[in-house]
Length: 347
Image (cartoon, rainbow, N blue to C red; front, side, top):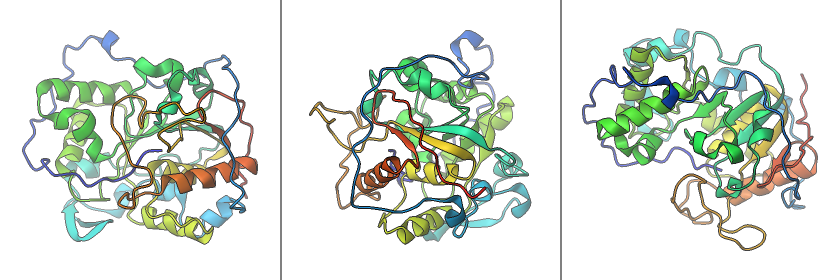
């Protein structure tokens, strides 16, 4: 799973050039569209599913979740709920605030981005290195709706992770970590190409979670606006993080702060009948003792059990494993398996 909303040292207050011209004259062959309009067909090798935990026993229902949040509405702040210049206090730092910019206001949706959508199955793709050499890509792309985390690259890993993207998250810190903090024109161009490749996907930006990424968010929004990209922008409601944590606490899952993966899983129960998880493996080694990279696409390391971590990923993993054992979701540790679990819904 991905860790969420890291506050980073803020170089974002520096002035970035407007991104108006970064895609002018670029060859279209360089930009491979990540949105697939039809599901690819194929099969992958089968292995055993995740190990299960006998320590938890609970039912998951969208009716329970609706007591805490409305996933469809809380997916994004709507344009009609704010005005340019409005003050917004950060969710994780209530003493700090920012403002709704003109660019953000114009790109906010006027209606919930996934209104009236309900999919037979959805894939939520984590970024664990367990996906490398898994050949899960074709199976992932067969799902009608695919959720990815933190602008993870897909083109060069498509055999293992697929390429279809319908919703992708982008922490502001990702711009710093994966795109050189936009310090040079080369990094700015790479970032512009990555966003263009997403086509008409929903780009989910937690802009108001933690102070530190205002400049990066604004630059991305200006790029989307100036280039007329098809991306649909979503900014989560201010109550979402605490509402999701509150829901899981009632299920006796004492998480500290929900990871991106758990947030997406909780939201997806409202618009997906079946939930299939890939690349969720918060451990440094696999079941055979082989080293597993934190991300399949870079060399970052992470201390999963550190008390200083804002997340409790192993606990989240055990929770999702329990749901898998109950048939509430389909979980794939690495290699593709037929996952037919159904998330209970009162719809």
